[in-house]
Image (cartoon, rainbow, N blue to C red):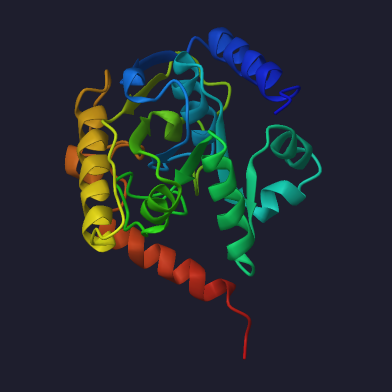
Length: 248
């Protein structure tokens, strides 16, 4: 696969990170296979998570192909970049096509990035996740790898103004041990195990973060922050979904 867009995009991103003096902690890159397909499953706390997950995989020499909503590809600015980096558009009205595209990429030795929560977590804890990542890993006979990012929400997240030029922000990227789901497994149980692994990584990233101030919006409630709880965030998401439904 020709890579004319992805490498220069990474160079630009790394340059910007250096200019802003973002302080990265990346651990667990040895858990990413050097070759062959893999499903990389990340939490979702910011609009920059695509960049940070890709950066976390870069030391292993891997380029991550993300599954992202079709609207991102329709945008006149992000669309050409997403297509040039061979990411996979997800049309919720025709999900089978994107699923097959992901399977073909996995069988071709690519790393597919999945945000299993589907949307950004307002609580900054791991929301309920679906079994799609498990099913893809099984169908293509590749490992499934949990991964988490933390800190990016301070720069740009749902319901908050962008602060992209904020300097000296610590960013944590942790990659967990591979999981190997197989045919015949209870997919609901494997999904629960994946959720538990991601939750443990998120809590570790949060508790070991260099800054743990109380009373700030970007900190989870259980650490004294003012972010909504999982239950409160779920109610907010439900309200948003209902508001987008066409009037009958």
